[in-house]
Length: 273
Ligand SMILES: [Fe+2]
Image (cartoon, rainbow, N blue to C red; front, side, top):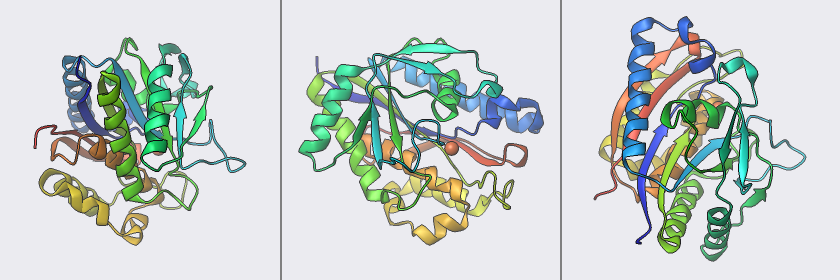
């Protein structure tokens, strides 16, 4: 069988999305939930063998005593969620250890040196998206953690390159692989700016993905910083873009939800271009 990236998407993962569903304006919530359910329907229709979820880690698995730019979770099984308050029932999901090994090997071959871990607890960055996209937790998951928390952060082009690693590994392994990049859009949780959403940045970012996606690699760090430190998580969308081969995005939702302290977006990348 010919391996390929069969699906690629970018979605927000704020814990409030499931933790405080009724704090959001009802229309915003319903539109965002509908978009997430649509992303899930398309993912499952693509019949992936493995779902790669690329997220930041919010100090549940990694801290400054060891903080890799990229970390591959290679366990045979993962548990979640790390946070009990996000209203997702405890779950176990199969891992993808042999694909994890292939990703490591292709990373080395393509000039990248990710860390790996045999114990990645799935916190909200993975659990919130998975609760919509594969609500039965019945697809093998490969977690990839990218440092979006403690500068220096991996540059945007390195995240794109990691997406290309995922693509090469899928093709080599003969697997149908879905890649979901999670995080962002603009937010600054726990800071004095918490709740401020940079709608202008978010809309510009989404429009770039829709019309000229490769331009996002040139976004200035200062502009991303100005949208709030949580915006650093757009890196995961760029990794998914790399896995998609730079295809344009279809924007399914954008809801700036102050009560969730996050500009919430959902896009699906084109694989034909
Ligand atoms: Fe996050």
